[in-house]
Length: 374
Ligand SMILES: Nc1ncnc2c1ncn2[C@@H]1O[C@H](COP(=O)(O)OP(=O)(O)OP(=O)(O)O)[C@@H](O)[C@H]1O
Ligand SMILES: [Mg+2]
Image (cartoon, rainbow, N blue to C red; front, side, top):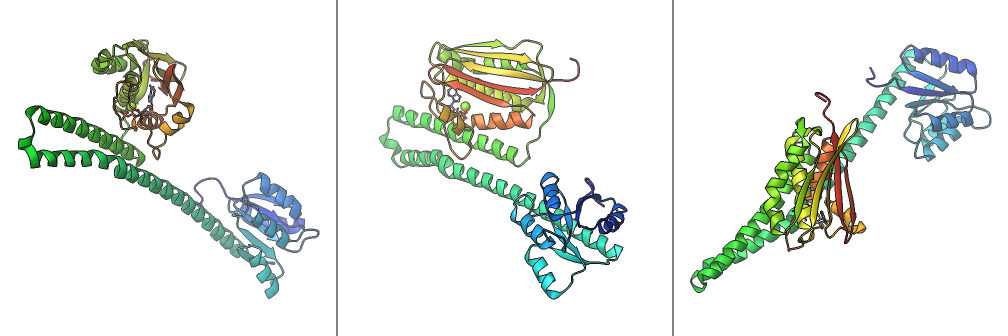
């Protein structure tokens, strides 16, 4: 009836014969049984092994069952393990005290096997359901926090480009005749820039939320990293030429990853375009590749402006928007690196940022190596 491991039950009783009787019944139902002959010994065992349920005798010398239960319920690590008292004491006072110390049930000695099994099963089931509920709650809370972050970005950053577009286009509509052709052109150019910026923010937000909700499909395939870097460098070359920056593709030709094509291209595009953006004219951007037994590693380096240690942490947080302008005023959404890290981790890789202000930055990531044809 239990899908995972057999539930672990601890019997604490000072009389060996009692332990034997209970253990014999439970063993027939595939429970994993441990025992302790005193309260102190029982508590010691509970600290070492994660039990699913404890059957506890009340009348024991030195430390009685009530005291054992009280101590277990005081400790955050053991408080959630259900305790059933196994006892001959069934007077009103004992029942009251047992429940008050945190016990969930009583089984009276001498007991019927079927009653013991039924009660043990129902409390273990209850514990499993509670654990599942706790896990689901934590997942809901995380999803909710992500939703809040997303909404706050939408509220703050996506509002801006729209306000600019609305204000300027209204001005044009209302007073078109008062503007020269050149002025109109300036406005139209700024519409283009602003809407492009707004669109890339929206696009990044959608990619991020899709990836958060697990709706992004990942289709790993054989990727030739030298080819992909070459393709990205060609795409970004005019941006680099404008700033007189040289991009070198130093990725060896024999490096193949097993990862999603579009996600890997997005990561390369973000990292190489950042390197260009945050490097001064005549700077250098290089992309290296390495491989070991299991993984490939791609490293994008630049000798640009670098990043403060305190800002590196901010770059990876969706709730703190950290975006600075490039060396010639290029603007961004501040979501690029967050997406890179997310995509690499989704493809079972690791993403690392190293940077020194004034010296340059090094962004690296690993991906699983292709297993076939290698
Ligand atoms: N190679 C780099 N050198 C120096 N700073 C960098 C580099 N890459 C990223 N940064 C810093 O990290 C910030 C966040 O980078 P990220 O790529 O997430 O956003 P962005 O480049 O501002 O916007 P987008 O990627 O949407 O164009 C940048 O604004 C910049 O301050
Ligand atoms: Mg970027």
